[in-house]
Image (cartoon, rainbow, N blue to C red; front, side, top):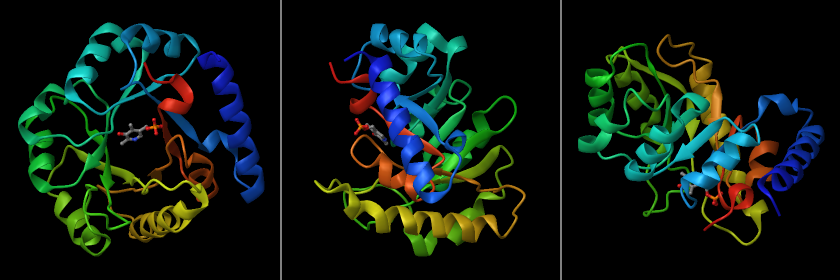
Length: 225
Ligand SMILES: *Cc1c(COP(=O)(O)O)cnc(C)c1O
């Protein structure tokens, strides 16, 4: 199957999931995660009209950005070491993995103009292997971020554990939505927190039903090489 064909199937699934829960499908943006594929395939992805591109490693992120930067909107979705962050800041518009103050401080120091649109990554499932702040630390963490003027907390991000049955991920996504709404209701100037980055190839349908506004799709959309 081509990327275009996969995209059409995925869009139909998104529409169906949105109808089920009375959402408008235009609220759901697809981030094409190109970490498993070449620059050539990334070009084919852009040629399909997908503009949100996600990368999780600094090396691949820079390679793709250098090749196609004017054509895309760039999302850094993986863990980011503070000492490597300067390579991403001023190139990537969105950061999905803000999980500590030292990283916020680095962004604040290095960003030359505007704000960086950040998702605070939350470890909802509590798996040790997963990054992200604990749900009970979320509000204090977000309050601390107010001191960094170039950080804008546009939403929350999580990764669900892998389950054969995607339905099992539902409580994780639901919890992230509840946390999002809690923060959003505070109407903090630095943290409008309207967005939810959740759902990957195996569980995006459940994530959309639970309110995802950005889904991050790698293997199911652009494949693996
Ligand atoms: C790799 C990755 C994805 C996409 O994974 P697929 O299962 O291939 O869709 C999404 N989010 C993050 C943070 C990733 O690292």
